[in-house]
Length: 51
Image (cartoon, rainbow, N blue to C red; front, side, top):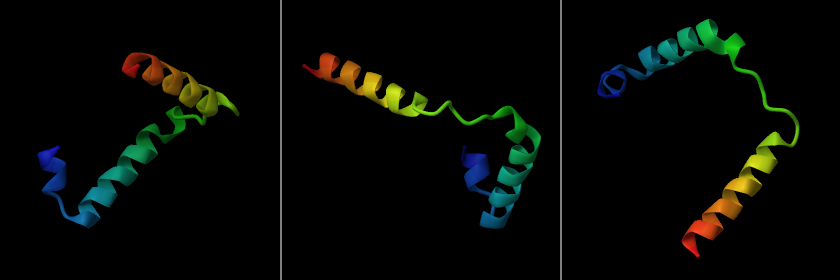
């Protein structure tokens, strides 16, 4: 992480772009509602653990 932070902002953006170009096609958006369901489940688990 320190190596990335030591780069200039332009170099960090360039690195991000190269990573996106190389793996961008592998990342797909979640199904509609999947994120909401995940957050609901996560919230319930958090409430159970902290109670």
